[in-house]
Image (spheres, one colour):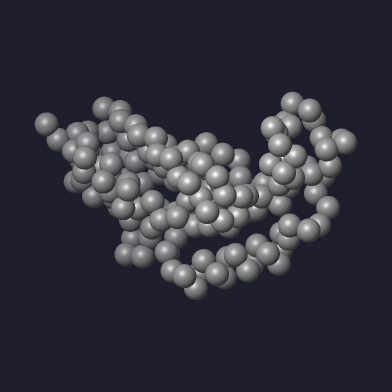
Length: 153
C-alpha cells in the first residue's frame, strides 16, 4: 500500500526549526498503518529535513554555528544577478538573494528522512525527532509525508 499527505508550514523566521514528529505520528495513526517505511520530504532547496534531538540549546548552537560559518553578509555568486543563470531567477529580487540559504542546506543536507514503521510505531530512538529546518526566510513551505508498506485491515 502507498499513502501520502502534503502539509503546509508557515515559517515565521529566517532560521526556524519545526518538530514534525507528532504530525507524522497522527498520519500513521489516522491511516491505520502498521509495517513499512515512512518518508518525510521537503520540496524546497533552502529547507531541510533531519532527525535529531528537539532541544532549545541545540537549536541555538546550530543557529550560532551557521551565523558564524555561513554568514548572510558575504559575497555569494548565487546573489550576483548580473552573472546568474536567468532560468534560476526568482519572482522578486529579495527572494533571489539567498546564496547563504543554499549553502546552509547543502551543509545540513537531506531533503528527506525515512523511518521504519514497525507494529504501527515509528522506529525513532529515545530522543530522536523529525525536524524541518527553514534556512531562508519566513514563508509558506510544503512537506510531503509518504508511506509504503502494510496497513491494518
